[in-house]
Length: 482
Image 1: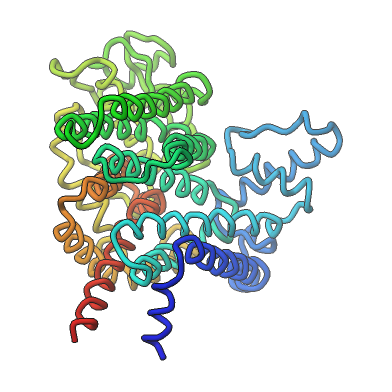
Image 2 (image 1 turned 45 degrees about the vertical axis):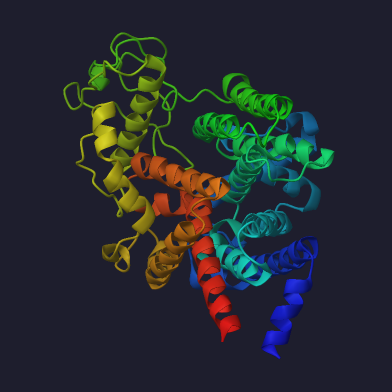
């Protein structure tokens, strides 16, 4: 009976499989979110916001902002609405639902469920490039049903939108890579989707975390160089006209991302510091904007979504050593990463990793890469699988994450096996490389493991889900041989 059900899944088209998966994840997400908000959280927790089903501190803050803005919109009209009230886009989105359906976090659950279901479908689409229906669906389910996802499925958060945006961009990059390999679909609607999908993904990232567009733009540009090189090396399989068209599409997406960063993103003095002397003491305290002292920029520089202002460091506590081999615009990005890292360390926390590690130059950051990858891919390490966290909810989350981390390690072994077996596929290297690069950036920037685990979810769980699909594919293949 089980084998017959598996074979029937193999006969279903990709679109129907995605539809079935999306409906299931949507129903699960809505039901799980409702159970948590209506019964579990009010009964188990007594903190502020628990009566409304909110337990995550950021979500409680978003809820308060949204309720105030909803009242303003009722009194003043829709002209009072803004996407980022107090700089927080989740509050702006929640405001829309509060005005239309009532000022309760329950009104956000269908939206959260839809976003999470779309992410599951995107993972399924990505995995179907490498696996048959059953392994791909199991990998997508593993991605979607991780209990950690309930933090944005059942609460008010930006992570669901952020994850979906990154998945769309990864899918877009993989589609471009197949086009340059001259073995992909040539229909006009498919070529149009090459541009449309990464643009939509860029917009979602811009809504959730505008600063991350800089990272994805860099990924897009590096990938573009690789794609063009591959296309030129296979001139017998791809025409000059097609090469020019694909390159124009890549440039248009990159130009769109750059315009969002340059003209439509709120200025972030940490990620894009405007300094003229990178070797100066950070604690000289000469304010933001152009400054010869290179002091710690004013503004939010912590690891929370509600980012408190960090007090300046002491004058001689840290000195940035400028590199002679890097262009200034790249040096500034390294400098911004270190500033943000210092802000996270300054705010403290129970899960800080390597707080005393001095990253005072671009070279020091590069030397730290192996350790950062270890933290990014293997965290939480065993010392964080128990003990007390900052809140009762996070203490419970530690135990849950500890129980599943060993399983994730086994899944990552499957990822390595799948990568080795399909190592000649450029699109797979694009997916793996993008995920590892994103995890690396967050591991360096966020030494707080609690924040790192949440921020890396979309990239990390894509690797884990791929490993699950790889193991399932191996077991399925062996069963067919027997």
